Amino acid sequence: MSQSAPTREVARRVFAQEFNDAAYTFKESDDERAPVYLLLPSGAQANRVFLVGTLTEKEDVGEDNEYWRGRIVDPTGTFFVYAGQYQPEAASALRELDAPSYVSIVGKPRTYETDDGTVNVSVRPESISKVDAATRDRWVVETAERTLERVDRFEEEGNEYGRMAREQYDLPVDSYRQAAIAALQSLETTDELEVEA
Picture (spheres, rainbow, N blue to C red):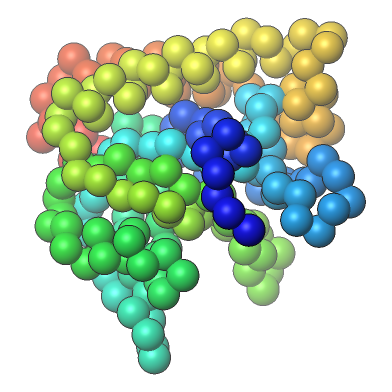
């Protein structure tokens, strides 16, 4: 199946705190090739995500083949990304990058249920690029704007993903508003403080 650009889903900007709270996935049709969406607790569906943060550590956790795990921190929490032989470009990028460094990642959300029934969510990266602090700061501002828009529309009558989120998650959606505002405020402090958090 060719990956032609027009059919690709928009990559949602989402902070780590909200991403890690998401656990419910769904398809919009019965077609086996239909995209799988992660339901964001603020009321949006995400087949792909776009994140920028600090790569704080990376490790080859593979046994027979290279399988890289990267830990990416944004002002609200931590994303985990995993890349192996099926994501050769992303795996190569993780191998080459030094931690800490700012990175931009586009990828697909993946959920995994642990033995105790907890659902963990991670990102399977399609691309990983090294970026500068200004790019990271711009991502924080734009992600905060998108998050606040989703929270503001959460209760709207026609918002089917807001309704789904209310049914699937028992989470205070206002916490994402607070996280977005705190993320914006974090830009006014130095990067050294962020690494300690």
